[in-house]
Length: 185
Image 1: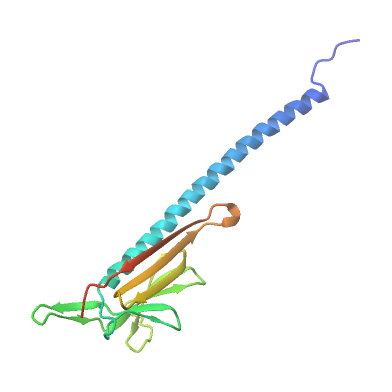
Image 2 (image 1 turned 180 degrees about the vertical axis):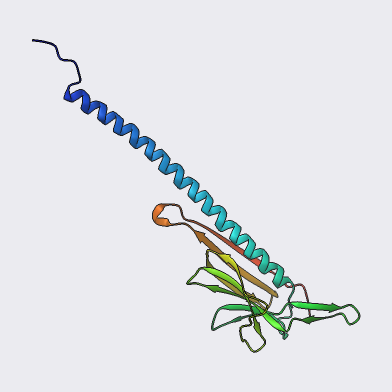
């Protein structure tokens, strides 16, 4: 009998098994690297949106009155959990008094879209079209304003989230900031 060249079924099975293990290891490493990259990207995006929103709110709230018994004090509308306040429009050095904008600056979280809006209302509470509303931050899942009348501060907790937990790439950032308005009017 002639000797046949080639692989036996056992040798082919072993070679295939080794190839599958190597391929599985490579695909697992690629999947892990993708998830790690996606999570890092989502963390950066959520953190950036959070920081921009907190900075804008801080800048606006510093320009209001810390006299929480006065007409210009920040307040939270109980129907919409919207934070409302009037910012300083101008300041008279001769009288030492501030005048305030003739409308409210408002912060509102649209929970269906996960977007934090800065919008404006007249003094009766009607939503204004000028100045325009601004989508201040996307991916916002929690916006909790609180007012401490004794300490004369506004505390804001803001959580931004991005990514899908089912894919293991979700990221969330929470910041709490305590803001003391500048004007004592």
